[in-house]
Amino acid sequence: MVPRTRRIVLLWSLVSVLLLVAGCGPNADEIKSANEATYRVQPESLLDVAANVAKENRYDVQVDREHMIFAAHPNASMIARDTEPPRQYPGGYPHWALEVSVVGTAAGCRVKVTPKVWQERLYAQPVYFSPDDPNTPGFVIDRANALSLAIYHRLGDRAGSPQQSSP
Image (cartoon, rainbow, N blue to C red; front, side, top):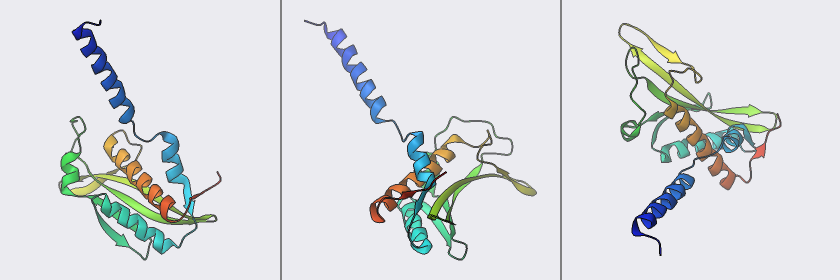
C-alpha cells in the first residue's frame, strides 16, 4: 500500500502533466499553414468571413471594402485580460490593433493578419513598432496568430480545404 502523501504527490504530478499537455497552443506548423493558405473564393466574401471571425472573437472591426482591409481593435474586455509581466515602456504602455487584409495571388486569395503597435507621445507623432521589435508585447503577436488560425479554421470548414500555396 502506498502512503497517502505519496499518492497525493503522484496525483498532483499527473494533473500537472495533463494540464501542461492540454494547455499547449498551436504549433509553428499550424501558424505557418494559416498564414500561407490561399483560397479560391471571391475576395469580398473572404473579407466578410474574416471580419465576422474577428467580431466573434470580440474585436471592434472597421472595414474598408475599397482596399480589401480592416482594422481589428481590441475591445475593453480584451484589454483588461491582457496579462503580460509589467515592463517599463518609455512614453507609456503601447496601443495595439490587428490589420487584416485580403491579398490576391496567382493561386487565389490570401488573408494576411499584421499586428500594429504604437505609442502615443505628448505633442509628437505616434511611434510605431515593427512586429519584430523587441518592445512589441508578445501577447500582440499571439493575438495575431490566434486570429489568423481562427480565420483559417473557419474558411477550411466553409470553403473546403484551403489550397496551400507553393513557396
